[in-house]
Length: 138
Image 1: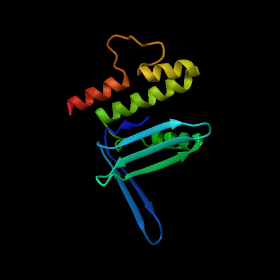
Image 2: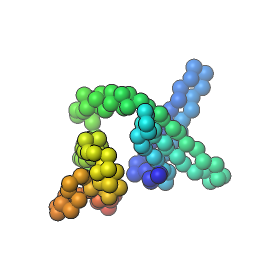
Image 3: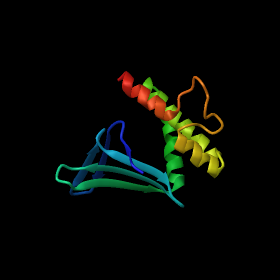
Image 4: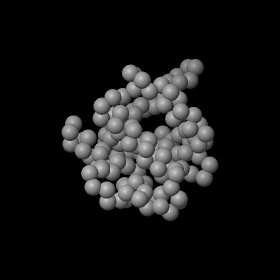
């Protein structure tokens, strides 16, 4: 299931004799999911000519874990601040809860956009509600 992108992404492939650059923006879509032995990230856009361009990144879970640990180690004054920092923190917490939850509860809570066991918590926003609020504030 693809979702609209809420920001921009750029993919650069560098070879010795050439370079490919792909940009994706708010009018494009993405998909991210766990497969049996990998994490799959797809960025997809449609051109005016009707052709669809996509980038697919397949990672073993250990590679994603290394990337997340490296990001955590570099979080400093150069890391995003304000709303972007809050959005990243909420997303990381959501992933942590989803990985800790039993599979049935995990799927249900992610589909509903609520953390496990806190589906009707007054005063707390779900990640989707927070993203919508951030967009309204922009």
